[in-house]
Length: 279
Image 1 (cartoon, one colour):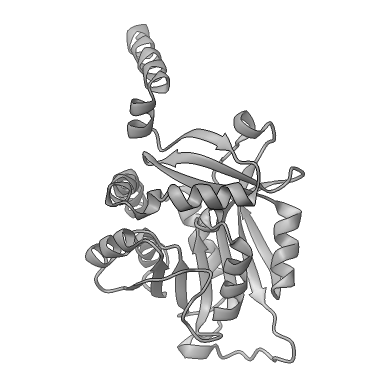
Image 2 (cartoon, rainbow, N blue to C red):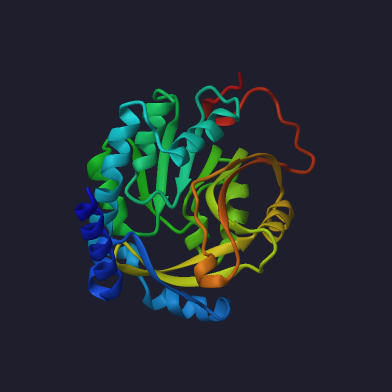
C-alpha cells in the first residue's frame, strides 16, 4: 500500500522539477507576478497561448472527463453554478452569448443541465478555439470576435455570459462595458478570481502548456467598475478553489456574479427582447 504513494510522490516531484514535464502535464504552472498593466499588455502581445491549436486540444482533453461526469449526473461545482446563474435570471428561453467561449463546452453544459432551453451563441478571439467549437457543436452559433469591441447592437441578447474569460482580458473594463451594452437583461461573470483586500494583480503563467496572462481582481474594485457600467449585483456564488497565495502572498478564491442591466429611463417589462420570456 505504501509503495504506490511513494511512487506518486516521487513522480510529482519529478514533474515539478522539470519545466517541460510541468507544462505538458499540469493544467496551470510557472506563475510570475507582473509589475503593472503595461507589462501585462506586453506579455499578452507575446504570450498568445489561447490562439494555438495545441492549447485547444489540451484543454479539450482536460474537459473530456468533466463532460462525461456531468452527463452521469455528477457536474463539477463550477459547471453547476454556471447553470444555476442562468436559471436564476428567470428567463424561460433566453438568448445568451458566451464571451470567451473557447471550444464551446458551456454549450454542452447548458444543453445538459438546462435541458436545451438556452438559445446559445459563442464568441472568442481565438480562431483555433472557434474552429474546434464549430466542429464539435455544429448546431450552435460561433464567431471569431473581440469581447472588448463586439459587433452586436445594443441589447441584442437577454444574457451575456462571460465564462471563465474575464480573468484573461487585459482590457477588462472595456469587456464589462461591452457586456452591459450587448445584454438586454443580465450579465453573468463566471468563475472570477478575486482578492478581498489585495490590489488587482496581473500574472503570467502556462495554461495547458502555453504562456498566457491572467488577472486576480480586487473584489471591491471589480464591483465598483461593474456599477459604473450600469450593472447591479443580484446574486453571487462561491466557485471552485483557486488560491494564489504561494505566488502573491495573498489568498484568493473564485466567485460567479449575476448582474442585472440597469439603463436610465428604461422600464423593464416581463417580456424579454428576442423571444425570451420571464417565468
